[in-house]
Length: 257
Image (cartoon, rainbow, N blue to C red; front, top):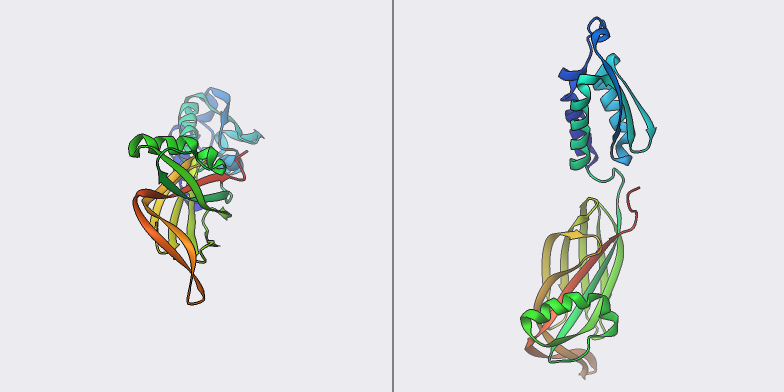
């Protein structure tokens, strides 16, 4: 991500060279009307853009940083328009920050049961999501089967391992990709060793910060733990009308300045 932004910055400021670099001997520069303007730039990129723009403009201009996120440019008046367009383009296309982004990942495995009833109290923040599902599948109430959470960093992979009351394991293998001001790229490989519901699921999605996202929906099953030959096993009765949902929410832990 850093290399991509550095390349974009250099390319953009180089575009203004033809319009605003003064001749090395300064003979033509003295006839140009100079203008002082201030530009807003990404805070994390202020120093880098000041250096790149200063090199591109050469001795015929001056670039300073009065504050983080601000560039003060003293340059030929006819060049300021090109400079402004180049810097505005960087602000729109560049990443929100150069540093790694930390996020809080939260997963919910939720069971939907046919018929009217109350959703589990712990799932109240998801009520809008459930209302949307009920509008398409009919009356249904939802209960939390399991929740899992972890902290992750952009550009890194991780795993969350849980164990259910029935004694089987769930794995949430994930990778956090590039982050923007709005969200992240999330790659997930989910595995459930249980005998029913959502057994395996893989996806790559763009997850917006603060949104609840239903990643998967599958026929569910109701299970109970029983003893068989002295061992605890899960006994499940499949119910084609019941749903098993996998839901995620991503929250940024280090918002940009």
